[in-house]
Length: 173
Image (cartoon, rainbow, N blue to C red; front, side, top):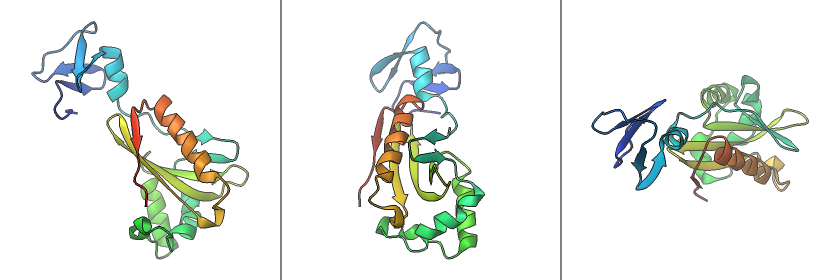
């Protein structure tokens, strides 16, 4: 894809200048006024790796699955935070559709209790190059137990290591 205002175009396993001339592996490329060698440039801007299951002491972070519909409905039938009001679910059929949409990519992450598999919340990590917009929404029934902190910490570690994030940002409401 084209990087706005940048001097190179990065595609999987190939780097070209904006003019289209192929560059050899030994050269350096200017990206956001930083010089990067080809392997670093490819690692930083390569397509995202697929979501792996992440396990913590008490939680499992994974893609959404059909069995998560009831758990999602439990906290999105009447969202507490106003920023999630647009996600309100009317019934279990809406929840099943929402779960299918969320499970289609790696942006939405189901947070489940490791002991029971029960969905207790979700995280999101929206990629923007090497930056991610992150956030979370948890069932208020599980508040005050440190689950959001544990899940977010595990996600952040994964973003910085496996997915080569350079920075994260979030909006707070």
